[in-house]
Structure formats: C-alpha cells, structure tokens
Length: 445
Image (cartoon, helix red, strand yellow):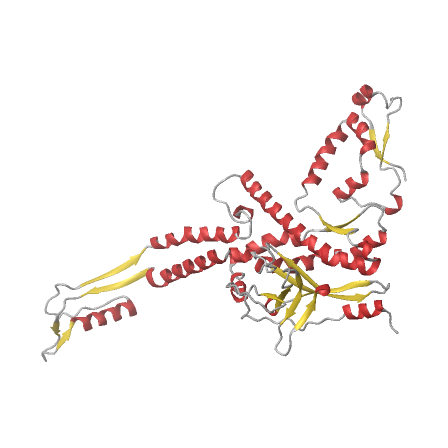
C-alpha cells in the first residue's frame, strides 16, 4: 500500500489547468467568494493590452521592470541551519529569478496581481522540487476568497467545458497595492488610464489637423448670378463656373477664366496656406501627457526621458527615487516567494519546523553599500596606521562577497592578508610605521 507521502507527492505533481489562451473580453477585478459573489470593475484586459502598445507606456514598463528582473537573490538562513537546506533552495529557486520576476512584474504592472499554479515533482535525490511555476492567464482566472474572512483560498479557471479549481497549496498569488482584502490589487497601468485616453484624443486631434487643416487650399469667390457664355443665350450659374475652376486648379494648379463673363466684379481666386502654427498647440500637451504616463509607473520622468531644465544632480536625485521604489517592489515580491514557495518546499522536505529558517534576500539594485565599502577601506588601507588598527576587525569574507571577489571554499581558513614589515622596522612602532610605510601582500599559499 503506498504511503501517505507518495500519495501526496503524486497529487501535488499534477497540473490541473489547460492551455492559457487570450480572452479579450475579460474584465479586471472579479472578486469571488465561496457564495459566488462577484464584483466587476470597469478597467478591462482589452484596454490594458491596448495601452501597453503606447510607446511611452512601453518605455515606462521597461524602465520599471528591467532593473528588478535583472537583480539577484542570495540565500540566507538562521544560525546553525544545515547547509543542505540552503543548497536546496539555491538549486530550486535562485536560478529562476529572471523568469519568475519578469512574469510577476508584468502581472502587477498591468493588472495589479499575478497568479501562478505551483507544480511539484520528485527530484533524482528523492526530494520534492518545484517542477514549474505555471503563469495563469488573468482573463481565465478568478481569485477565490473565504466568504467569512476574505482570505485567499485559491483560483478558479473558467473553461468552456468545465471550471477548474486550483487549491490553495498549489496556488501562488502576488498582489500589488491591495486595499483591504481585494486581492486583485491596483495595477500601475490603471494609474495611466486617464492620461492615456487624453493622449489618444489629443494625438487624434493633431492627426486630423495635419490631414484637413494644414497645407494649401484654393478658394474661388464668385457673385450670385448667372452668366451668358455663348451666342445661344444659354445662361450658366456662377457656382457651376466656380466648381469648374476649382477642379482645374486642383488638377494642375492653373486655370483659364472665360472672357465671355459679363462682369468680373466679385470674382476672386486665392490660395489659403496654413504655416503650421496651429500644430504647435498640440506639442506641449502631448509632452505633458507623456510625462503623466511615465509618472503613473511611480517614476520621475527624468529617470529615462529627455530633460528640458534642471541639472545633472537633479536627474541623479530622480533616479535615486525610482531605484528606491523598485527596491521596495523587489522586496515585496521576494517576501511572497519566501512565504508561499520557499517555506512550502522546506516543510515538504525538512519538516514543518524548517519553515522560515531559510529565505531569499534581494541584493540592492543600487549598490550604495558596496561603493561606501570601497571608498572607506581605500582610505583605511592608504593609511598604514589605520590598516594595522582595522585588519583584525575586518570581516574579510563579507567584503569579498560585497565586492564580488571569488572565495576559494577549500582555503577559507587561510589568512587573507599579511603585514610584512620592512627589515629593521618595528611593526609596533606607530610613528615609524607611519613614516616608512608597510608592505601589503597576499598570504603565501
């Protein structure tokens, strides 16, 4: 008889959702309780997919998500935790960061939430691993919540033939800017919706102006009466004559006026030209709306868009603000991965007491700490007295890790640096050491 563990692994290893096909008719934000209560919202997936094709929105999404997706995870643990747990999480999660982050970021930027199905499998070493994190298409997916508490309880996928439920233990939900227990959150793209509509309207107006107003137009002024054009006494309307003149002008730019006209008084032919002055009114408005679209992604526009005023220092400040926001989002996503993926893998393989003992940690996107360490220890090492005073208190491995220096795992216990005094120099003589200096060299191997 199979044991409970084997049955559990077999059950967790099944994928319960079908192909993820686009459904343009979906609406963002359907909250479903156990009692099938639904609350629609007006911002649709079709609108979202239209908006991401806007050049400014596309740039803002890339600038916001690129640095986060290209960042790194390190693995940390509580004191005394078996190294096997850290190695296991590195193997299962760390190498997948870019794919996981890119998918989550698209979901939270565009829709305010990102749903996954966790599919597990048994590894060659007998442990339960994460076979894949399967992204679920928003159009087909409904968030299930507890009718009493509002707690997230899994997903439902609405299919033509039958609905598929994804249970809580095989679900991963990363919500963003959540209000209360509305797990659909608030996407950054929705911030840009109003500006996008105005940008589209303004750009359409500019296009109509270019096609219908700008350029040159012939105008023929004529008197309201009829003319006799030949000896047959046939009288012709001046309007008909004017239309013939316009047709000739539009065809070849020249016209011949019949001399048989009784009176040329009131006739006038002129060319109206627009010098494009009206088009300049559209440019500042479109530029303003471009900035609004960029700001919708929580970033000052000077982080990526051309600046018109201000200084380089001001632009650097804008970039610092953007990086701080990105780091907060990075940590938010990493926390959810720790809570609902890392802890579950630890519990399945090392027991429930292993939850929280190992965790992912995001490296700073702007490594200010690294720059500070470099500058600080340059000054310390440049001063022999400072170096000799600090060498025993320096965490050498920590510095190597911050500076990206490879560590030889087989020689971790060897001294990193040695201080070799000059012949005849007493290393305890601070004054002499300061005046003559010391030689810093790598420890002998």
